[in-house]
Image (tube, rainbow, N blue to C red; front, side, top):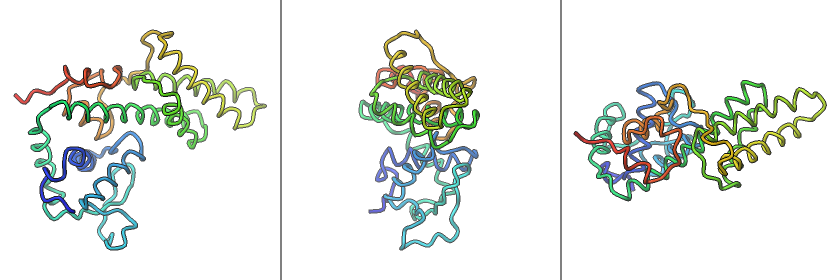
Length: 249
């Protein structure tokens, strides 16, 4: 059923809707990866807040496109207008008591953002060194299959090391692309295991601007929690979120 209020929509949906509208207002990507942005829009579509291409019962005439990902979507929620919904969502999110459930949801979102920040950085490094962008999915496989818990900065370091290894292999000029790719994937795994074991100390690649570049991450790290550099350098947990709570004033 279509929710009548933001309370009916619930916290995750409100967070995703805020990120979508904030992305349009500030010309941002919704999330670090297109996959996560699409997941957010699919959640909103499942609540009939918006429509996505392929829904036979909804015309996409007059659809918008997300500013950077270019995903078409059309507002269908009769309870609010897209142009005026953002302040209402911000009021709703500010009114939600930060209890253990909210902290748990926050830690889960943080963990997902950590993974996607690393995948986005790996993609950037691949493009920079003229490797196949399709290889970016190897970071997601490494994160999932290794089951290692690292910070966003540590995963970014692993991505950098892997692409550096790939460049060294490619300079040999005799290896097929598949061997170069496997060498890079192996380097992600090797570096991640070493970092998790403490062999590289506090090694990590923290961006020069600690403010995340996407709407969902900015809302999480700067508006709902005051994480600062901790967004990049800490392991996601409810304990790490406690001292980062935003005061209501």
